[in-house]
Length: 389
Image (cartoon, rainbow, N blue to C red; front, side):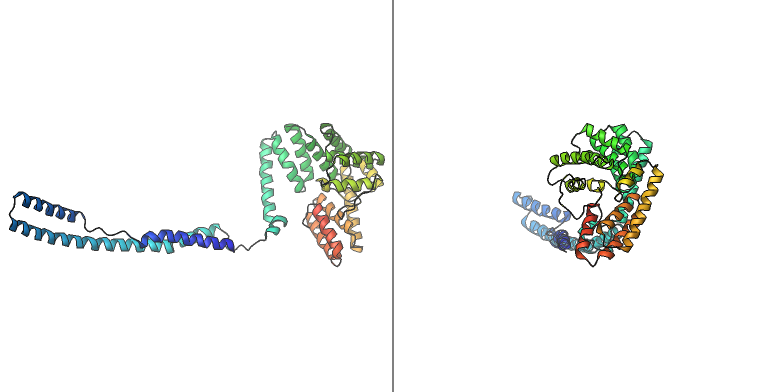
């Protein structure tokens, strides 16, 4: 409201600036060019009389005639100037008061959004906007077209890869990360990001291919937190819990106290018996790369992990979907499991089933809606997954 008040004051000031000179016109001239000629004639008569070139009676008669003509010319000039000035001022005032607002409205209504309702700032920052999503996908399509024509643009692949992860296009993100490394050079961040996406595609299993990427990242930067975390996770999945604890202890020693991934490492360390962790509402029984910047599927048992490593990509995907369906069915029977709901939502997001993820969020809130504490834990968990809590 304050903004519109300021705009109104500015508009009034602009109109006042336009109308002020129109209401204070300059004085009309006492005569035009004809009056000036008559004045010169009067002056010439005075000179001739002074020099004796003309007699006094003749000079007086000439003065009377010229003065009469001068008065007539001056009166006509004032009348014409006055009429013209008034007409011009009236036309300008009408244009300023009526024409300018009409012109502004004619431009605003087709180009502006006069019927758009107010949208609170908090919702603009957090609520998903379908129009923005469509715009993002359109931008991605343009970038992909550019990269199709310029496949060696490594910088373009590097920019595109994380956007594809956000859109849930993990297979395309893997290809984009690989191309960015091929054409723009490798770095610890790119190698660890590639390994993370490969792990997410495999349902949270650190495959041999993903492990290789994390090892390459650590070779480039021994302190890379993402690479060290996932290498510890790989050791845990291989049954080498002592090695996992060693890796995560070393990572915690170099991790700042306010690092966002610190609670995740602490809970992982506690899980393998390497120390106590400070419990948080967002921690789950399975490490989630989402907390480290990526995505993961539901928790997998040691036996399932071992079996998954020997499966083909198609069989592994089928197994994960089967697990997700069993989890969904279990939550229908017991809807008070907050961590289970978070697992289910995250799994749907990883698999690209965004509609099912939204439905699961609605079902979870309906199931725990009568328990304020559980609802708060669920909303906090959604925030850690990068969703609207």
